[in-house]
Length: 126
Length: 239
Image (cartoon, rainbow over all chains, first blue to last red; front, side):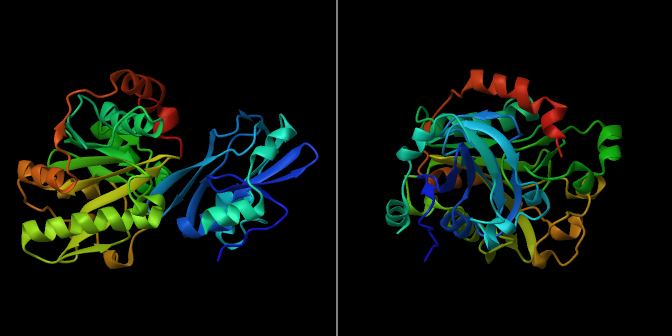
């Protein structure tokens, strides 16, 4: 059973968002990391990049597959988790903590209401 | 499913074509397709995240004029040359439950290809190293994926009559390798299938029910991807 924290919002493409003021922290869910299995590579967006909700913003590689990660909310990247370059396995071991991907200054905080809450995401992933 | 048997003139165009077909299907404006292409020259293709300096004898590639390109899928670095048969499956992730995740997609496609090859060879074929097809301990096919939101590109190479002896010249021992490789150099690790190319293409086409022969591909997108990506050092040697 996947871990789905109640204080986060989720996309149907399995990213999570923690919104604090105008800054959103983004990562991929426990369900996603289980499906991907052991990550060997994470590519993150550049700081300063403006990204729209639904846009491809990162790439992860596992088991001979490179997969796009989509941005759940629009904004400008303010910080990335540089630790993932050397330790992509953090996404597997701590997807909601040390395995976070990047932070955004959100364009419109109201966009978050279009995302799933924990119970809706739990229903999606079964 | 569409069947596109087209080899474009350059390595860059051939890699771009796989990506353009994936993008088209992902955007909902292209069909599922099985594509075949065969290299007409020797070149090297890095996996998405491979570091050129770790995987290649870069000086030898430069001196020999062997181009180095990077693909969008995962996995390791390969030598492409006449005698390799490349295929690309572009599938909608909604087509089958197995296509929903990376691992199930690997098993879904690889098991079909394993079974087909076993039938053609009359010999045991195994899946190892996640997505290698292996005959008598030797790799005869390597495969990888690129996944977007709505579609997946699953592509790979069958070694039919490839110049295995050139692999050690241009490729270093890989930075990651499956346990079954057991430290073997390239020429002792891979083998050619010796199957007729047209026979294999016909069997794979039948397997995937790719019975609608297509003669068009997204030429504008291919040209754009070559110009903005596959012809650029910034992409091909980015790591």
